[in-house]
Length: 340
Image (tube, rainbow, N blue to C red; front, top):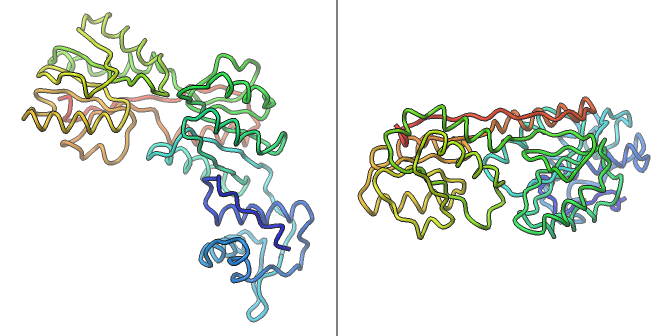
């Protein structure tokens, strides 16, 4: 019985959800039959090495779905083997962050109980990406939904992605030109997005002297962002610079810094404070990726950001529609005090 319950320690999927999915897969495969007695909460907690509260939450959710039923003094039994869960999703993100959580939450919410989701994080490491993908075997999932951002080793990762049947592949955030054929995608147009976003705040930018894009050399961000930034600056005759190391860059009144990474943002804020300069007056700041916190940092950070909730929702719609459409995701700028 306990062989039916597997917990993958590499997975970022909550353990209560993993436990639910193993029960559902066992029922669908016929390993668990209607009327079968389930292990007790204490037994399953001991054998899977997860907390009693986690097992209890999983069983309660399965009761809500109508898969299990509880009888006082007897335990939990399989109530129904008729489960409407048509999709099993392999979901892999390059990292965990506040905005990636928005994508995940929107994706899972839109799918509802129609799919189980195995969620993995590869930390921008192509070797880890390949290892996780290969460990799951071929044709295990109905869909493979992947954010493909790699610091190095991209060639090997692309080769691994290329093995996935196109009918099962959905890329998020970024399209890979090397992956040919018809597959689903919800992507950003990085060069055009930054160009159009800066154009929308052209009047505010004209109060400053130099535009500086902070783009670390070992960044997973697409270099198309640099192309769009340079194109905008040349179109509107702004003095500009691509900064690879914020720690070595002078902070001078009249500068506008466009930050991709959170660590660089806080390093910059510390230096501005140390020099006694004022954000929004002496120094302009534009931060990539909107989060709730940025509304309150230095009276409000101007942000450029794709719509993360829309990305997750549209990816789920591609799954539910079995669609191979490629959808450009909305991108917007929110003007706040850091640039006014």
